[in-house]
Every structure is written in C-alpha cells, then in structure tokens.
Length: 250
Image (cartoon, rainbow, N blue to C red; front, side, top):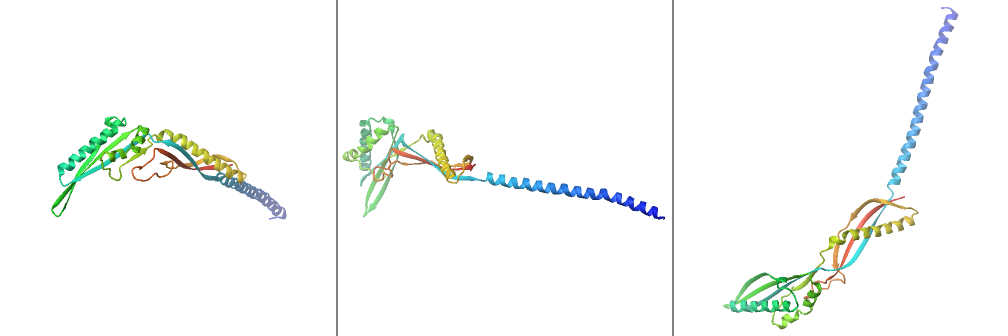
C-alpha cells in the first residue's frame, strides 16, 4: 500500500470516530439534565409532602344545661308477720295508700304500675316469719309534679308505708339526639379556636380539617351527684361532649 492510500485510510477512520464521540457526549448531557430535573422534582415533592404533613391536633369542648324530660320512681315496700295473710294484708293496704298519694298529687292511674312482688320466710326456734315485698313504678313526663311527689314522700311514711332503701326518683334526658348536631358543631368551633391560637403562636394559618373524632356524649347531674337516700338523681342535667380534630396548617 502506498503512502497516499495509508493517509486516506487514516482520514476515513477519523471521520468515523468523530460522530460516535459526539453521540456519547450528547447522551451523557441528556442523562445529566434528567438527573438534575429528577432531583429537583424529587426535592420539590418532598417539600410539598412535608408541607402537607403540617397539622395540629386539638380538642374541642361543648357543654349544655338541660332539664330531664322523663321521671321514674321505683317504690319498694314490705311488711313482715308470723302470719302470711297478715303480711299480705298489710302490703295491700300500703298499695292502696300509695295509689291514693299519687292520685292526690294529680297523677293519672296508669302512671303507677306494679313491677313485682315476692314472699320470703325465716324460721327461728320453730317460729316462722313471713316478709312480703311489693314494687310499684311511677313513670311520668311531668317533671315538676314528680319533684313535688319526692318532696312529699315522707307523707307515705306517715301513712304507715315502710319504704325500703333504694326507693328513689330517677330523672332521664331522652332528647339527646335532638341537640347532638348543634353540640358537635360547637365543639368543632371550640377546637378551631384552639388551633388558631396555636397557629398564631407559630406564625401559621389554620386550614381545612384533616380528620376528626367525635367523643362520646356524657350526661351528668348539673350540680354534681345529689346522692343521699330518696334523692337518687336530679332533673337538672349537664350534657358534655369532647371532639378531637386535626387541622392542616398553612
């Protein structure tokens, strides 16, 4: 091969090598740009995720004073005698006295219903004593009249009726479902106020509700446990609910 041929061959090889190098550098540049862009997008995504996680969880309280709308009174009384017939007669007489007592107070006859009776006996030195127990239940929505009955319950004792321990009026608030929506809204509003105070202290703003949990409703005596014999409950109640709410922070 002559020198001219060798030179021509070398020149041809150089022309072939140059495009390959350019293609390699171009690919590397594209990969670099892709990595830079991907890193930026990843970092920006992490920042957005971190911002999305910014939230505050607070509790909101709502309370309301209500008056019971149902009164129930289980009246337990008994009589004891060595004669079963005598004990039974005494209980029948007490039942008549109790019915007259509530009639005088203006309660309808159907407001008072018998709920049970039993007889027990005890023998000592060959002598058997019989005890007859009777229970009557008063059920009424007339709360004021029920309160008057409780205030005058010792009139029954004056009539010779032996009231057993545990006989007392119980008051119930049955319209909880009627006030639930308003109370939940009030508790949520209270929770947002707490969140806004937290956000103010941290130079943030309160956003939407992220999640929330409604607590259970609690109905208690407004003035605490009345306690005591014959006063098992109070008609004046306090309804309370606590909600747990998470708010996003802007």
